[in-house]
Length: 356
Image (cartoon, rainbow, N blue to C red; front, side):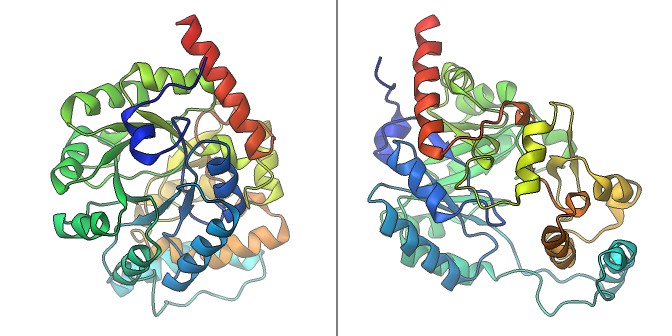
């Protein structure tokens, strides 16, 4: 049985209804993105935490490895202007753990994130087949600029109101991010707690609410999950955690080991690492910060303040202080090269659709 063609596979010119999620922080190395593309899906490169030049260079590396369409993702962010006391409290909370890692006391930073405007211009220059966005919504004029460069546009939604906002802005696709998804929640309308809606509940409601195709994300780890997403009305599935244990995924070996060893109950959502709700494997950092997580500065300030600590933990192999992003399907992870994983997903999808 050949892979089902959907409005999304046709629009993106891909063979399989599988999108590899753009996971910020280095996981989506060009080798991973290209391998997924070459296997018939759509790989995605995370530009959200990169300088404009780094994004341009990453895109060039991907194009050297594949002639297939791929995506690039950005976070929609304004320039943060935190109050000094917020920053001071964030620094205070991190001080004991920094000391344990041999780091000096932290200091306020001159800049807490890359300016979105510069990142957006780099995205226009790179002109990937798919430009995807998280944490907010573009203006209609920004969407039109991307369309003029030949880019399809996808916005992330964690509730129906967000799906409608992206549709109104002119997005080509909506990525419906269920509560099971690993890493940062994309919520930008309403509060995080009310938007922890499971994938199986969110996807059909988003499909019914908007007149553009929907991509299902959150907890999808195998062909059965992809088939379920299609049955719910989605045109494709976006998968992140499933690819983290591939050798091409550029994450710490200790993180990969924990992905393989953890249970479905091993993750929680927390503000502690970045100031924005994100799902990861529970570790000592998350436990110690739990009573204070609502005291930390909002994203991206806390994310920047913890950056040096997380990097030092990685160098020392101290997974108890690393941000171990993962979705609830993590026990289903497979340590396969991306091409082999894609082949298995294709075979599993065919079997699941035949059974159904």
